[in-house]
Image (cartoon, rainbow, N blue to C red):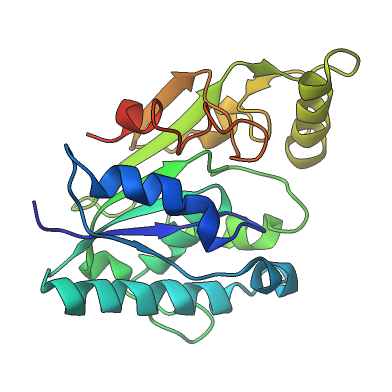
Length: 226
């Protein structure tokens, strides 16, 4: 398979956070050419709901570079956290805020990792609502959608530090802290209608506090990448 992979990171992430994942995907048995969308932490910090055009523009540029350099007609997209939601928006054939990305013409598959496809997060609620209204679920039938969720961190108001952090994240962004998830995003919020919804026990959301068990860890990537 000669299709390149394009990775889009999550909120307040850095491209360097995905170098380990890229190396895994570039090595056997996958042996893929991997591009990481260059969205700096400082760029994420300037974004305001519902205007995420700066990131969408960078994603579109990265996909075009990947296609041009490899000669491939399309790519496989991987979006982590908020990047998965923005990847879905990039697929849109109709204009978003006057820009027509039409990524559905250039994408063969989309894998989202720990992406909250349903959310009441105040900083993304408008954008997520517009996306789910116009392009609900696995909207384009010719694209293979896979939504990956982690499970194993139960939110607790009082308990271990990881459980209390999870409770706060689940409560503030999803209205209920007493549920299971990856430590940041509840498992249930990652469900995408019509997609291949995959739940990985023990998978954690971010690299920083779980380098061996987050979605991009060496032992976890093979569980969602085939």
